[in-house]
Image 1: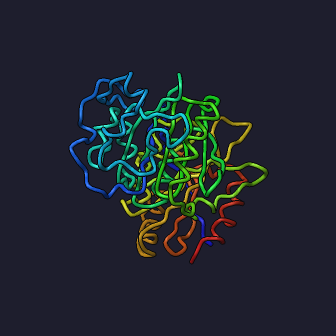
Image 2: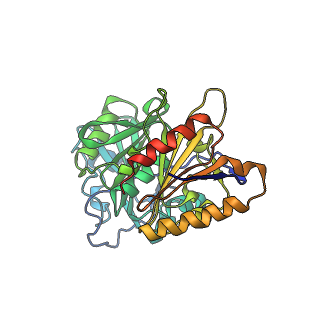
Image 3: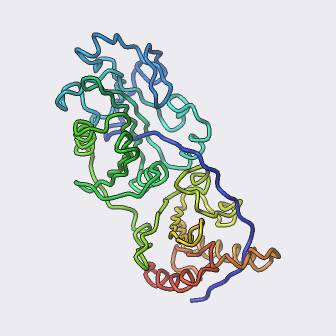
Length: 345
């Protein structure tokens, strides 16, 4: 295995929180007049969208009749989960109309590289508590897992039924991934809130996690934080990527296309605010991986800045290209060959 190393400048990623959530398994159904563009009298704390609601009646009977016809079936109707009444009807948006449900242009930019099929939002009440739900349905499980990886600011853990979870703020915000769906539930940290989340997850088909992400195992008892993206743009402005060092123009340097998949793994180092960063790109073909390697190696060889010594790439193996942006860490240099040996040929 040949390893090329030198270095180039970094872009320090700013901190910025993002949020939204997934959708269900029947997003291909016809879209009717009650789409996300309908106006309402109640504002969602998550998206800013307004929905027509009569509060007293909604709390008593629910507003299921106002759901968009394309509403994912995994989103329960009123009282399908004991005590939970839908008080904000389901609104949906397709991939090319994310601005209907998401007001933040930076969030839209981070999500656009993923192969999103549908975004859906709605709200529930349980007594005096509320739960705002956002679902993102994607065309592939790896895209849904990718959305989950950038949306959840904390470490993920496995959950029942093949799902993965990540909670914030004592459970007031819950993130989850299962199959081709990313799910976020805000507002209720009680057992009832967990029951609502579990009910939605139970209704979703499962799928395997991206095998590329599983290649980055724990070393020296340090479990890496992993992100799965189609573009390095999706890493910008996240609290979870604060310790990452990502090169400017990373997409160009790596030769990423909409068909590429980039996995970034960060291993925390107690003595430093930055993390040891490794990455793996899966290209569409062996030839594409070889071309990207040759282009990137030429860039490294021609770099004149001292920081270029921190970039290291290995010979491509099949469709895969492996490297690091923190080559100065001795453990990284030893770990790269071990990962390279496990790559499918």
